[in-house]
Image (tube, rainbow, N blue to C red; front, side, top):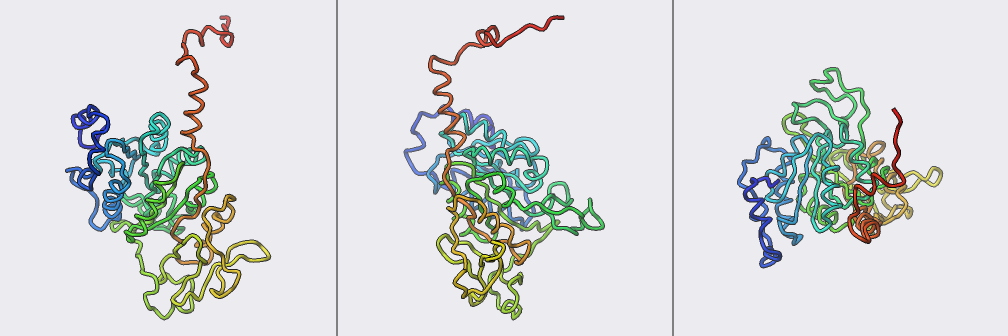
Length: 362
């Protein structure tokens, strides 16, 4: 369906091939007239604005773009992008998107989901889309709370989160979306934040260029139920000079080919413990400081990086954790169809009455 209505969607389908190529798409081409219904201050506004600017920059026409969402605050986004869109059912957005992508490999397919939609009821659908390496760009809006249903704790909420469903504090240990994606074998995994438009745009651009499944966790605050403060790096607080976990530092920014150092004077760095092989916070001048390489085929390094914030840092690192090449499920599916149908589509009657059928006696 088209988020602006069936009539407009039908009209687009009748446009001659190549019409969209007569001029470059603009932000206006991806903007609907629908009222944006998110709370003031919600990070979803920033992500929507970024997407409206990103999609025309990619050069893909609106009618060749599909945005599939599940259920939640984030999942209203297809209504506000003038592309083809599917507002599907709870947790099943990756499944709907997989069907679109493998049958129409010419389309640019995006999945919009949240920490509740993707990591709770949609957990299986998410990990299987990632392990299959379906050519999807999955945006996981993570505000660590169920916003649409009024603030219950989610699978990403911290232990002790007080909410309507956990008045004495949540007992659940939270999911780490990056670690989860890496464990599922995702070929592109990244984390960014809603308040840094440049970083968000660069991360989504890199994901769009990736051939295969791309999981992008977008950390954001919920101003109504779970307002997570975002601090700029190096705000000048004296505690930042002595505490690598100070929230004043903000997140470490991962840059390919550069050493992972941070702090007001780059006094801290990420080094590998020679005894355990784990990544730990050390001295920024240590020659063993890790040089970031998201292209490392073995995901062990990226996984260790994803766990840093749980032990030694106040904020999880942002940037591309892993980006490796592997045949996409879409490509393999199309190649299989080409060999499975050498003489056409086949006949259902021949299949049902062939040698693999049998009769069960009553």
